Structures are given as C-alpha cells and as structure tokens.
Length: 186
Image (cartoon, rainbow, N blue to C red):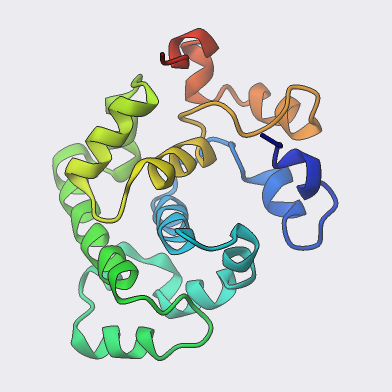
C-alpha cells in the first residue's frame, strides 16, 4: 500500500491538506463536522475530487455550522441535490443532516463533539467503527478510519520520514499516548 505522502507533498490539490491538516489534532466543531462530511462525501470517489469540491461543500453546508445543517428541511435537500459544486447523493446529504442532529445531542450530553470523541479514547479501529456505526449514519469502516486518522485519533496518516509527521507528532495527537502497538489488531 502506498502512502498519501508519496504523491500529496507539493501537489496543488493535496499538498496543503497533507501538510497542515491530515492527522493533525482537531477540536473545532465546524472543522470536525466538515471533516466527517467530507469523508462521507468521499465514499466511492477520489479524495482529490472532494478537496476540489471543498469550497462548494463549505458554501452549500453553511460553513458546516452544525445548528444550521441540523435544521435543514426538504427545500434544503432539494437545493443540495441540485448543487453541482458538491457530491449530489441523497444518502450522503441525508447522513450529513442526521449527523449534525446527532452532534447537537452529543453537545448536550458531553459539552461538545470533540469532548465526546475524547471521552471514547482510547479505542482500537474496530471499536471506533462499531461506535460510529451505532451513533452516526453512513460511517462504515473506511469512513470512520479516515475521519479519526484525519483528526489525530488513529495513527497511519504519514510516513515517519515525512516532514508533516514530525510537525504533527510534536502536537501530541491522541493516538501517540497509546503507542502504535495498541492499534495493531489481529
């Protein structure tokens, strides 16, 4: 399996995301929600396409404001399904809206989406997948894995010799506290 680092460094589409976001700890609710929606939208598609549509997704989903998206109704769904700047898939759009509502509930019970995630840590990938499938919509194994890797809760985003790896490990992503051996599943 190749590494994202092998082609992302210096790439006009992937470079900035690779160098400054992928694997870096994140706690901001809008950014967490954006990352979750982007991973959902990416299912079955190329990550580069999602990065190219990122600005359109941001506009279409009102800056990934959880409270706004949670209130979306039928008119918003029609608007989204007709927006060429995003991935126009009804299941993915409905999942984004549902997941915004779930995040509101998690905010009520845990203070924030970030607190809920942190409160579950540490879990192995299979435990995270089980939890996300139970909690959210459209969050299978790959989506959950990539989401959690992208925000620093699962390892594997960068090669150890990648400059981004050095930067992100200096920020002590949550997975580092457990060490890599914890995440090695049979």
